[in-house]
Amino acid sequence: MTKIVAKPFLKWAGGKTQLIEQIENQLPENIIDNNFTYIEPFVGSGAVLFWMLEKFPNLENAIINDINKDLTNCYISIKEDVENLINILSEWQSEYYLLAQNDAEKKEYYYAKRTLFNSRNSNQTTQSALFIFLNRTCFNGLFRVNRKNEFNVPIGSYKKPLICNSENLRAVSKVLQRVEILNGDYSETLNFATENTFFYFDPPYKPLSETSSFNSYAKDEFNDAEQIRLKDFCTELDNLNHQWILSNSDVKGKNPNDNFFDDLYSDFNIYRVNARRSINANPNKRGKLTELLITNQVLQEVNLQ
Image 1: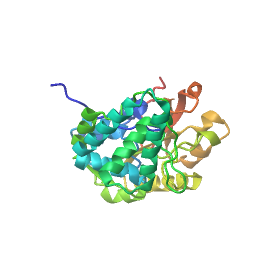
Image 2 (image 1 turned 135 degrees about the horizontal axis):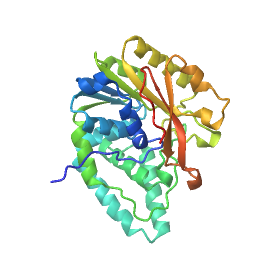
Image 3 (image 1 turned 135 degrees about the vertical axis):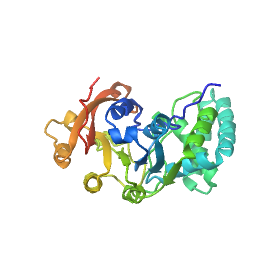
Image 4 (image 1 turned 60 degrees about the vertical axis):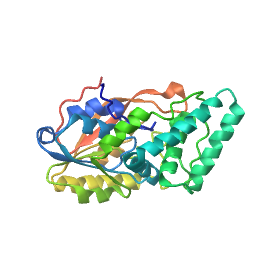
């Protein structure tokens, strides 16, 4: 029987699948050679998490966190109640497919599910199913909420999107048995660090323009002050001899005079790598751009291919 490897179960702005090779090349040797704890304080779609769990049998403890409670509840539901989750999603997928040729009824179905999600009156598994359904059927796979914490993305144009990938959900559930799931401020993850710990940070990216800020997946904005607070946390980790890699947007690529990250992380090592942006309202603006990998260790020479 072919082994099903767990992969992200959501579409996610800034998903890190395309950066995994770059991250792998820069992992510290003591992580590769010894038992270690892996901590991801902004888990998002979990691309790096699932890769780490598959790649490193010596990964002894894994801790993930996100400020987005809808997201972390979804991870918990997959971990603890995956069969009921699959049953719900499978039923909704069948119902949605029957409406593929009727745009009016399909819209009515989608917006009814969106209203139900925003009421937050369902049990955790149903609420998580709504989360996945909306992610797979909404415009461009975005997850965005307003300041009232209401999901406000319109319906997408997909005829028959894959809403229930039961094989992958079961694979994700299996690997999540090894993972502790937190919902809170990223700084609280320090409480779970052990002697040999590696942190990977994938925070909400600093927008390259006013219109590119599609990362509002929590009702509170991750602004420049938050970017600075995160850098201070990274400095604290460095002082405690914990190793970390952080990714973020390369604002200098958009504006050569913008030295925000170059100045902020001047005490650490900054590398620019190519990455592909797959979520953008304008398909012509999807494609390669440089992103930053920042770390408190000296990396190998980074390949920009």
